[in-house]
Every structure is written in C-alpha cells, then in structure tokens.
Length: 132
Image (cartoon, rainbow, N blue to C red; front, side, top):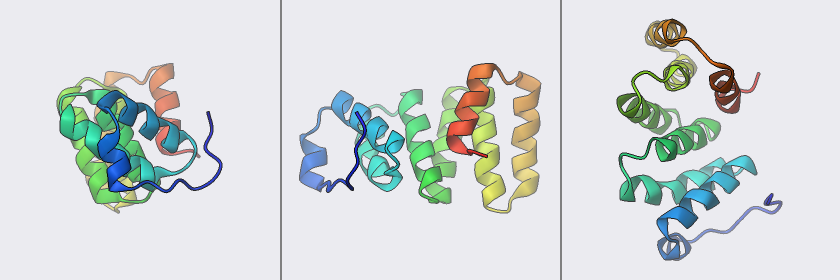
C-alpha cells in the first residue's frame, strides 16, 4: 500500500500502535517517501526492541532520507554493534559520515565494508539509503 497524502500522525496515534504495527507502518511511510514521519513512528519500535537490527536499519534509513544525519549516524552505529559483519551496515554508516563531511571516518567504514564483501542484496540496500 502506498500513502499518497502526507499523513497526520499524532503522539496518541503512535502510542496506540502495537510494536509490530508501528514497524510495518514506519516501513510503509519510508517507502512512500515520508521519512520524518517514519522516524517518529519507528522510535517506538527501537524503544521497545532495542536489539532488533531491522528496526535500527529502518530508523537509520528514515533519518538519512530526512537529512537528520546525527540521528542516522547513531542508528547506523547501533546497527553495526548488532551486526558487525554486515557490509551494508558499514556502507550505510560510511555514507552517513561522508554526508557530514567526515570523509576519513567514512572511508574507514567503506574499507571495512569492502573487506566484508558487498553482496547483491547489500548493494540493493545501499541504493535504498543513497540512490544515485
């Protein structure tokens, strides 16, 4: 389902969602190009499930797409903690650092990602964060 009109999401609406519903709704908001709203909804998910890598990935992608680079960096760093061998997580963190003009730190993450080997699915996930 694609959301065409900008959604009005209140704190009460977010509070009324179950964690799984919030995850799916945040995912839909992000794919419908409403990253700010997605980040607000997904905050509930990472608060409830702080060790859920998929939720941190979505939070990072949402903040990155909304140009909230510091929260995106925090989310991607948490994702790297949870999945240290994920080339995608390293690449996403590297892209986030690059966007903040922290190229030396970003290059280190890109080198680690290259050493881990980027799979076809990782390459697709990188395109989701930084469509060229």
